[in-house]
Amino acid sequence: MIENRDLQKDLHQLDKILKDKGISRRDAMKMMGLSGAALFTGGTELEAATVANASEAKGKILIIGGGLAGTSTAARLTNSLSNPDITILEPEPNSVSYQPGQTLVAAGLWKKNDLMYKRDDFVPNGTKLIAEKAVEFNPDNNTVTTDKGTIISYDYLVVSTGVTLDYGSIKGLEEVGELYSVGNNTEAVKLLTKKGVSSIYTIDGAEQTWTNLQAFIEKAKKGQKVNGLYTHPNTPIKCGGAPKKIMYLTNARLNEAGEQARANANLHFYPNGSTMFGIKDYHDAIVKQFEARNMNYSYKHNLVEIKDGIAVFDDHSKFNEVYDEDLEENVKETIHTMVEKEFDFIHVTPPMKAPTEIAKSPIGSKKGWVPVNKETLQHVKYPNIFALGDIAAVPMGKTGGSVRKQYKVVVNNIISMMEKGEIPKTNAKYDGYTVCPLITDIGTVMLAEFNWASKELKSGKNAASISLLDPTKERYIWWLLKVYLLKPMTVYGMLSGKA
Image (cartoon, rainbow, N blue to C red; front, top):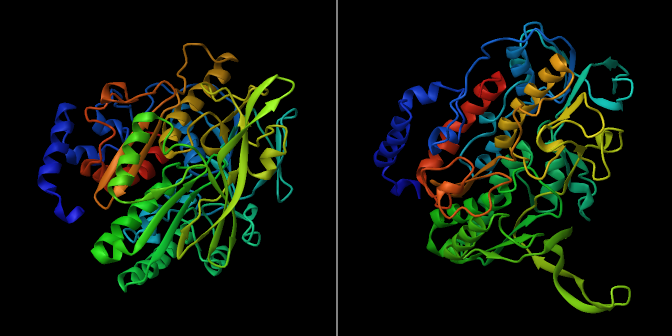
């Protein structure tokens, strides 16, 4: 726990790592143009805060979505062009609120107001903001139509709408419907609460989760045997570590309440997938952490229904071998069994999907996501369209750490298109970089960094940032990064286009 840490010793270690880079801790706090993780891990990029030579290229750029990805892109384009013509289409006044902090709110470590930032405070000077929603895309004519009937033309389009939270696809939660992480979700959270469901994927939901979690812990503290369930759905999700983070933090809060409280609580993780993490070394580390904390897990369980304190899962962990006449050989046939699990507390990670107006448009795909080249982030069909963040169809990357790499690639490639009509092969490419600060306790974080090339990370030498420290170890130094540095680096670094 955090109280038992030697703060001065750990800050001394932090200072040593910074000293190797030639910067003080105080300077590091100010230098928001630095990479959050690379600042500590020995990465080589100390990125320039400004663009040395602004491009004279001209073109009308329309950005759909004014969250972290869209606003950061607008800011960097503003810094990079001598005469920018940029429009952001974003109806939500709090679109830039700091979503990675929702887990900390759910554990009672931060308050809701610690996350709230106003869109209008971060729109770059000279950028036009239209507070409307894109509902129709006509890429053949380079136009977008909004929910108010406004038709906007563009030379280049950037799509950064994020995802929708599809609670309504779970039986029993139909009334909740589809939500976005930011916005007024109070009524939807009331509906979830009536069903006994907690979920950190909206800011309002994170706040309610802390209330629900305290009630759960109080039952255990008073001697009641209680069940806490945690789900991970059968769709791609933003921040893949979040379902485990809230489970780790529940464990931490139960331990704070006393040995008996923890002993009375059964904590069980039900992921749809067959591993804890896509990279073996991180998977192995998490399994060991779960076992050391007496936290249980069952793979290949997908939540399909909530009813009266019972969660219904599709257990697809077993299979039969059947003879396939066409192949003339035995093949595995998955067995689907509906299983019911009682709960006193359940954290639901909702299925996630592309917004309907994107998925069913010409710029969408069968799976909904905007199909792009995974390295250039350029649309596979329309060369003047780019996508980044959660909406982009890339193998990995639904994290803020990915966006920090992606938006620079998008800006470079749009400017290349404006100047040359094409993207040179020498241009910067997105390498699939993702970082997940996996909170494992109040006071420790495992900093999982990887890219498409990363497979095994037995030492930091194979990590995406060539870490000086073993990336599979839980460390207080990464807690300092997560709780004290990442938010200002994100809010004031990326949203200025400099980090």
